[in-house]
Length: 321
Image 1 (cartoon, one colour):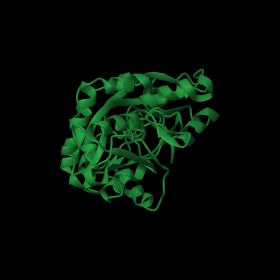
Image 2 (tube, rainbow, N blue to C red):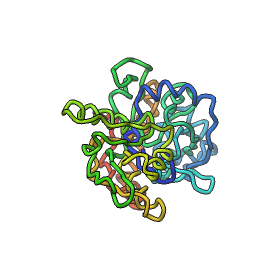
Image 3 (tube, rainbow, N blue to C red):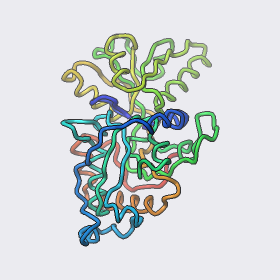
Image 4 (spheres, rainbow, N blue to C red):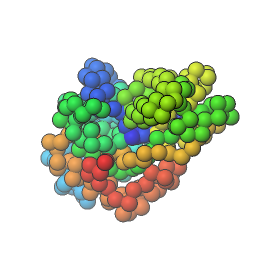
């Protein structure tokens, strides 16, 4: 949200977008058309009894059983969590969704659009779920903005991963930034509407409360722009989800563009967002996440993407605190 995160093929995300941004900017997404692609997993069809053989098919709402598809909203710009490659949406989240589809007997069909609008579009009925490295927070659960103002009904989360906020800098770390605390008086780039934007705002207040200069926060619509700002030297650092930042440092310009400094902070769960009125789907997804954890599929997916640091032992519903 926490979470996420990258808006390029190399971001790391705790993509925890601020709920206010999700609610306000979300309305714009309703008119936007994203790239749509199957997640790659074939959980079977709801026809001819094939899906009925899936162990958890009976737990799904009848509407989804009949459709044979779970419509997923995402923002496919957060490698390795979700990004586009060769016309397909790939990454940790699509692979986990494909594995869930095998247990549930349906296909998860991803559509990429604006991250800020995912929750609003979910609650409008455009999607059945949102899977996009979204950090599960009490504010999102309750539809509140950062000041506690009620903006919408909120969503339920099925937690499946965890990640914290990380700071990345240009390779060689020319400004000698070693943690988020070192950003007082500096310029930092971030994606708008994310929890790591909130992390920068919180740290900037800590700076000024301690008699230091505020952080100049430059917020961008996507993480690619934030990365470019850091790479050009316009910002001394960027802030992102830990897995995304690590992937960015490993892959951008062959590993020669960025490096991650310090440890991840404020680690929290990523959740599959579900409309609060759809308790049956939430329960089915929780059972499916636990099933892939128990049979080892989950571990294989995280190992494939180098995302082992985010593993959970068990799914949880609304576990964000």
